[in-house]
Amino acid sequence: MCKESVMSELTKTVGVIGLGLIGGSMAIDLKRRGYAQTVLGVEQDSVAAEAARTIGLVDETVSYEDCIRRADIVVVAVPVSSAVNLLPDILDRFTDGQIVIDVCSTKGRICHATQYHPRRGQYVSTHPMAGTEYSGPWAAQPGLFDGRACIFADSEKSSPRALKAVEELYDVLHMRPIYMNADQHDVHTAYVSHISHITSFALALTVLDKEKDEKHIFDLASGGFSSTVRLAKSSADMWVPILSQNHDNVLRVMDTYIGKMQAFRDAVAGYDEEKIRELIREANKIKKILR
Amino acid sequence: MCKESVMSELTKTVGVIGLGLIGGSMAIDLKRRGYAQTVLGVEQDSVAAEAARTIGLVDETVSYEDCIRRADIVVVAVPVSSAVNLLPDILDRFTDGQIVIDVCSTKGRICHATQYHPRRGQYVSTHPMAGTEYSGPWAAQPGLFDGRACIFADSEKSSPRALKAVEELYDVLHMRPIYMNADQHDVHTAYVSHISHITSFALALTVLDKEKDEKHIFDLASGGFSSTVRLAKSSADMWVPILSQNHDNVLRVMDTYIGKMQAFRDAVAGYDEEKIRELIREANKIKKILR
Image 1 (tube, rainbow over the protein chains, first blue to last red):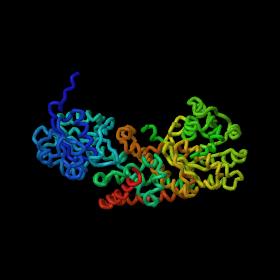
Image 2: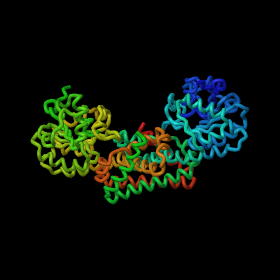
Image 3: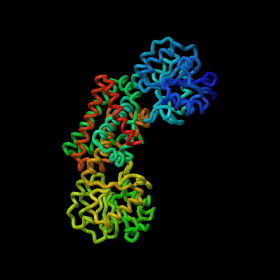
């Protein structure tokens, strides 16, 4: 079988806007694995831009305008509140054949903001489900995406050619594609991703509030606590817009969560060991899904 | 300098009661690293006992009575609700020179239950802060304790000789000793360990409740979600007694936690981005303590 490649003849230059954890990590692997001949980087923050150059994340850091002019594929890897404004502007500036993707963690508003754009077909909306709790070009690493899932949102609105090129891009990053519409995406990620960040933030706030003696936290933190609180290190610049844009879904899942905590609390308060056991056994069922 | 060893002339035989994750892992390293000449195991559950023999966790599985009769040091590694009853009985059966330690995650009630026992000096109350979310002899592994902290509770109530022998035991396991009284221990572990298990249980309950389609959980679970929900796999047999015995502290920390979640929820509900940012930035301070 001959797997015809769209990008092999197309992709010479990839432009990455936002050289943080996600943008930087994509830059590394797209270059190393031969998808991109040249990687251009756009980074507003001068310290981060200097770091990206020092680390060698990209071949060249350029202006936003230059990037849009020269890139065959533009990757928008900035907080979703900025991306939602950037995308229509990028499409406005595009000539035929150029492709833009975003990698934001909420998809509803960004897809709605672009849906009637005359160049909508040149945009592919994706969410590579990978990351760490660290941010900035310093956090970028090779192999970050390997084996993870990448969601394609509203992919039927992209042109077949653009979609194929971006599927190839994520194939090079070793990601499994999953297709769903933007609104479904936002419901599911609220339950599986966004809430776990909020529970970590609340856990950190609780411990910091109560354990005035930091040495105790350090000494007593077992592997379990560290892994549960890990996401509380995540950046406000990224998470404020996510929680804001996915407002309704996030609120609904928080209410469910608070209800579960309250049920647990009532069982403990009432010395109801049978009920506690039942809740833990029910929670244990997550084992069947996540090994 | 000549570091005089109590155990080198003393410890020939270590008896481990309860061949689960903790007991089994101790058995492995105490034998491999030469602290114990012989390791005896006591395991009520016949399937677990057979597994422990098959895996070769101990030299011999014996009856409880046999173990107490033959062991120089007895390690009690059963849920704290059983341990609290076992300890006085073990001390009753002891002859001079034998030593018993427990490895339970709550220390208040177990220390109180033994405080006036005539052989209290032969008991050393410890909490090795290590583990995984898995349980049973199958979960035992070498090196589990390396580099972690081990709390010695009410150590002034142990005889200097017993304390020294047990300090040597944990030194062989490469653990850092920390000393505090039993009640302090229970306050700190409620904040740093117990609450993180409860938040994981509640997270699992929330996701299982809302995501009826298990495939979505599996597909969308990023590393972040997996690490946050990991502790929800923990066993009810271990955790019901912990939450029950540490009732007051656990309840207090749960109330603080629910308050933090509620504050977060209200900020999201009110579209108060400044407040959300403030809460996340405050939570981020955990970075300074846990790298």
